[in-house]
Length: 240
Image (cartoon, rainbow, N blue to C red; front, side, top):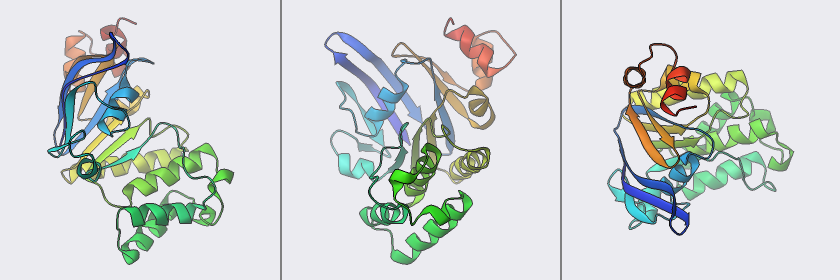
């Protein structure tokens, strides 16, 4: 479970980028965060993962405070950022082995995970090459595999489908659904509303740093008084 309690963030004093948001994401849920550009989605995810300090409030991952128990809290999740910035001088295999070692994954299990997922995502033959030669999509696949390496209970993904080819995109969506079905959390931000509509159990809409809706897609349609697509409901509730 991920719980956000009365969290605010200001890059400039007095100008809140995130304004007193509270949110509870229960186990067994695929949870989508949507909103216009600059709404605060990535800022929120950066606070959940401990990349960005919290000005007010606190965030808990399976009961562990990201502020007071950062190491224990960070063991509770795997994170894919919106831009795949990784150690480009390493080969893909060296990078995956490094991540596996950091999370103390047993050698046999690590090798099995690397082999299976690299083949499924279509980059097995590229693992011997340096990451600096990879395309954006290949780096994204490598990051996703590294996140799954230690089988974290909570997946936190910031625009994870960006740059993926159709096969990899389909595979990731299936993995997300499978992970949640086992009683885990999948939290992801996206601009692809069709994806959110297909796989999310619940969504949150953030606009101008404020949480303006939390619930199911059907509840959003009822709130926005439209029975059409999520896209139409989203545009109506955000006033765009």
